Amino acid sequence: MQVKKITKVLIANRGEIALRIIRSCKELDIKSVSIFSTIDARGVWVRKADESVLLEGDPIRVYLDYKNIVEIAKKVGADAIHPGYGFLSENPDFAQHCIDNGIIFIGPKPEHIALFGDKMASKVAMKAVGVPVIEGTDTPITDINEAIKIAKEIGFPVIIKAAFGGGGKGMRIVKKEEEFVAMFEAATKEAERFFGRGDAFIEKYLSNPRHIEVQIVADKYGNVIHLGERDCSIQRKHQKVVEIAPSPRLNDTVRKELLRTSKKAMIKLGYESVGTVEYLVDEEDNFYFIEMNTRVQVEHTITEAISGVDIIYRMIRIAEGNKLPFMQEDIKFRGYAIEFRINAEDPKNGFIPSSGRITTYLSPGGPGVRMDSIGFKDYVVPTNYDSMIGKMIVSGLDWDSVVRKSRRALDEFIVAGIPTNIPLHREIVRDEDFKEGIFNTTYLDKKLPTFT
Ligand code: ADP
Image 1 (spheres, rainbow, N blue to C red):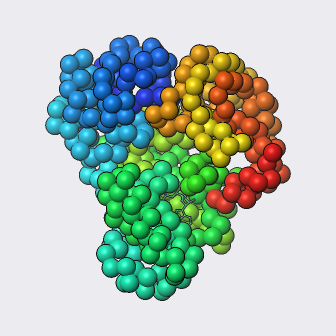
Image 2 (spheres, rainbow, N blue to C red):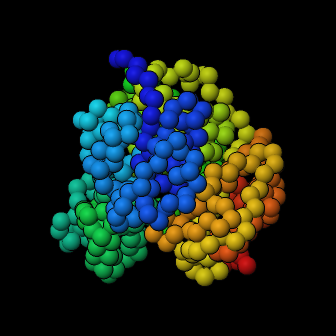
């Protein structure tokens, strides 16, 4: 395989991840091109890119129209496209369309994106390469009575999941048989609305699991390494709010096994680029694969902090056809890192998304604080997109100091004009259980009523 140096990257995304990609491009002396909707004209990433192209039309659809995006890439002379996360990042047709047009898709192979886009098929594939999966069905529910029978065999509670779901959508927990039909209908309807496909399957519902995921980096020559795990148990509505690396209370033997299993599976499947293998770990420390994400994730930052590896930079180098310049033994993990997702939403009012003008913006700083944010004074947060306006990443040598540093940084952070979830984060870092590193996926639901 040949190495083909990338000279210009079009970023098929918006917001903080677009800015993050631009930053790596600058360090690599690669030109960056951003695309933007009419609403995003004042976005910082638009101004930081070397070139930017306005996309007239529906402000969401323009970021999804991949044929047009590839046309623009050709027109501006971009030789590669980075999809970021969300939008087109896990669309195998987009990846294939880039390849067919002679443009490097900075990400995994289309066949892997397609395979892992189907949660049910992913479970079957991972099971076949020795990864434990949660008990459940491996074909879509077609007969509701049959499904209820299976649910009874598994034992309630069960969870109904959309095969093509994501972002916490298309999932319903079913506590007893009587609720099954209604929950099944709710899950499939939601899946159809958000993902255009209603296929659903059943899985055993684990009561107090931790969400632990493994970062994988793989080149085109079969070299696969892991960059440790992240604990993403602190969630609201099955969506991550705070992420931590490494998982503070994960048993060392379990950690080793998780990392080893993930890496082995990716070698067997011939995976390439970066990806994340997600697991739930139950109270007895059994781990089960739930899904694989074939893109850079929001929380890649904390892995960068503890491993010293720049994940976006590496994705680009891999896409060019370069071999990994390091092996597993070269990766030395250091300390802890926490990422706080800064969302424009009102924690005092049911977390409804907020929009409007930021009137004051004072970013925290100091040792161990990294800000990946698109916020600034007078920026108008739109209603059209995801509510995350940035991420605060805090790192240090030990857990206690990182928690203290986080508390200090969150207290420094001022965003006025619109409500944000910063007050929620301030409560979390003062919570005794959090300080002890004790949390699972039910943590926030249980704590929210106790926070002021
Ligand atoms: P999505 O792709 O929508 O993010 P995931 O399958 O990754 O969905 O699950 C998101 C979250 O939902 C998990 O982190 C966990 O909190 C919860 N969850 C998913 N499956 C189960 C399960 N079988 N038992 C308990 N909780 C689950």
